[in-house]
Length: 466
Image (tube, rainbow, N blue to C red; front, side, top):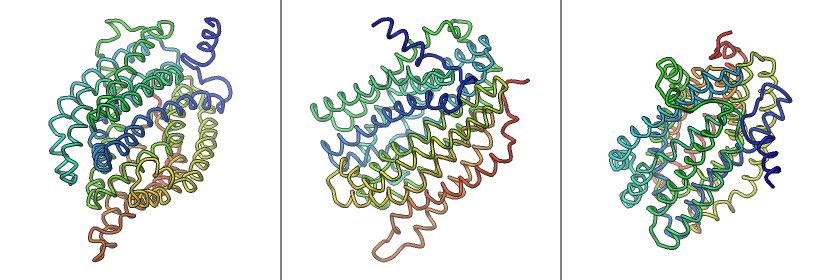
């Protein structure tokens, strides 16, 4: 048994060199565990929603959904660090530069601690004011505030799991983060059942189960990093904040952080519009976000895979493999997403019924999913092309593309479409404008991304000078 485990670890786990071999197999080998892990992570939110909807009610389900935009906004503080770290680590690993790889990982660990403290200080005090600003219905504010306060209190697990898993993935290891995440997902499910269904703690029980399982994930990922002495070093010297590495992290990560921040702000603005459609719509929107999370898993999984693949090959100076890998990534992500879209069109109503028994919520959510379905394929192509740009070191172009897509197109379009659909029976407009405006933004975003990818300027942005 010990020999079998060692053989598995040697062949599938650990750092993966993607500068050799078939690009298709490199991407599949890396992306499949990543996809399973992303699905498992999405199960956190999905199980929370199912248990809350079934054991507490639609109001509690809507309260958890109303909490999402603020949490996502605060998380952008570490999203930028995670993206910048992934690019640097993949390129230094591809170049076989142990010193800079070790110092980068140590810097990331130290910066992550600082970000965690900032999140806790900022997040908790703004919970209730945020609920008022975004027009959350009064009967949901208390539950949403309780949920978010507990989540922010234990946010260290969320930060360290995601950033440290990104470090492992930058070196091509997507298997071990998957193991730890699956363990945490199982603990989260049992925690939800015990605290919500058993002890009747409501949304507080959901939040406690979530942060507890994520802290366990973070501990396991850190232990894994500590054991990888054959690849890099972690000691007092590497944990020092180095000005040049912090500067490079900021330069590479800030555009992605800004992108995520603007995206979260735009979601808050749209959420304010969505909240005006009432509790049924908020509950349906919460369920759709859970289903949507599964639908876009291949999109983001292959987008993350192509970023690491491109980073390693750029670091190794193999640009011909970069172009070939991008093409293979488009085939994989596009094909899998098409299958998912067909499944959503056929089974969308039944997916909604797993979360709630309320007919109005089921009808709204099913309509929402059908409108968004076609956009998932466009989103898949966009993420592969932008992932290629980021892996090469160009994080500026994807930033501007995302800003245009979310701020200049999506937000004004949603409010304009709401305004032109106002009637006596629909005083706030037609709720279908929320998914329709997102679909249009995705399609326009694909066109702009393809244009800048084909220009080829992104290929000149490598972190490592040659």
